[in-house]
Amino acid sequence: MEQKAFWERRAREFAGLYEEPTLFNRLFRRALYLRAQMTVERVRAVPGASVLDVGSGPGRNSVLFVKEAGAARVVGVDLAEDMVALARDLAARHGTADRCSFATGDFMKTDPPGAPFDFAVALGVMDYIGDPAPMLARMRGLARREVIASFPGFAPLRVLQRRVRYALGGCRVYWFGRAEIEGFFRSAGFPSWELLPCSGAGWLGVGRTG
Ligand SMILES: C[S@@+](CC[C@H](N)C(=O)[O-])C[C@H]1O[C@@H](n2cnc3c(N)ncnc32)[C@H](O)[C@@H]1O
View (cartoon, rainbow, N blue to C red):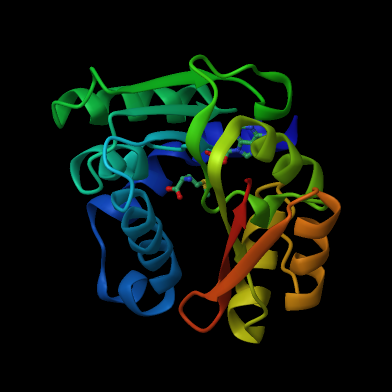
């Protein structure tokens, strides 16, 4: 699977975006930090919440859900073994290993332990999926309260730069218009949802499951 190989190779580089938030990243990758902060605030509103972190990557957000949002339990699932290794290490370093666990695998084919969860979250994942509706539907089936997913919007310079850079690495990237994202939530069967603007160039979609 091209995505898995891509993220195995990029695991350490991607983790570095959080470890060394340079001025460039703060300016041009603002959505990366903002989408996590917006999600932390929603999780914090439910004391002792459980969270499924789909495409948990290096685990930075999983740890934030425990440390900053007070989540009692976070389960991360990621395709890339190297990402899962980084996530486990990060959780241990932050003293949250008892509340964060991580599994390697394709979320679409993995039964995450401990389902259902209050929240099912996918940050920075739909960017690499041509049709996010099936993933949203699967997340809906595992979440009691909300499904939260980020979607990149169209920002011409950034889109061109990402398309070239990721294509060279063998990974396709996608971006979606507002109406298209609404359509994904509709066809995934959500009774209601909202799209919150995220840094002017993307969206945080919040689907209610109940
Ligand atoms: C850009 S990283 C985002 C990581 C993390 N959510 C964050 O925001 O820091 C995207 C991650 O999604 C994972 N991923 C993509 N599709 C997946 C799938 N079907 N199942 C599990 N993980 C997936 C990739 O392996 C990669 O680690």
